[in-house]
Amino acid sequence: MERAEALLHIRELTGKDLRPLADYYGLTVWKDGKKNKGWTGHVIERYLGLPLNSSPAPNFGSWELKVVPLKYDRNRVLKVKETMAITMLDPVEVLAKDFEDSHLFTKLRKQIVVSHIFEDVNETSAILHTAAEFDLDNPHVYAQVKADYETVRAALQTSGFSSLTGKMGILVQPRTKGAGHGSISRAFYARTTFVAHILNIAAWPGMPVAVPEEYSA
Image (cartoon, rainbow, N blue to C red; front, side, top):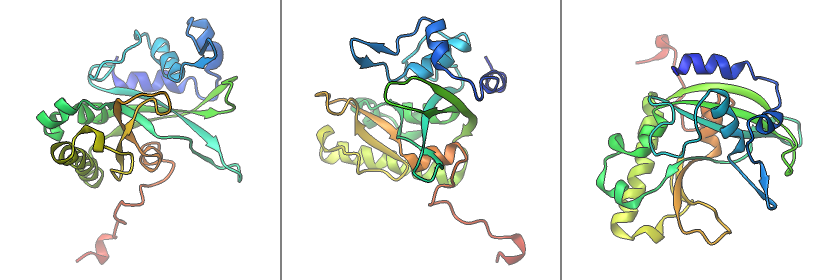
């Protein structure tokens, strides 16, 4: 399915609750007291007619689908709730491939990012809020994501896999996946400021301010 067509279909769900759709598609939200954290993404995939997929390649061939939660702050303003997992971090692959050939670049290059409103820890509902297209084509954002990738490569080369930490990276961080459950695997995550930029909720603070042509040198 082409991205433009998928975006139209997804936007038909704006304002609708994804929780009943999980039941309709037979998707597990809770099992043995453990939440399937990716259930909202699985709902959208099934809605678009795609089998569930965890491949390093984009799940729609030329573009990638991501689903992220938003939450209201104390002033009832919607904010990005958490970082967004992009792809698993394979140290062999990262060391072997330049950014332009990496899974990270492939996953970020062309996306639809869907947001839903987080209501409670029991996942009683998930109202679809927005669906935004994102292309990694802004030169400033591209340069920073590439720099974050190169930071990870340099750390792998000099200090090894165990040296990777979520403190690294301005837009993209390498972080333990499944923290608190004894996991030692890592993945690339988009920081909340990056996710907000992708969703057009807030500009990335590192973006240069546009200068009107008449004031430029």
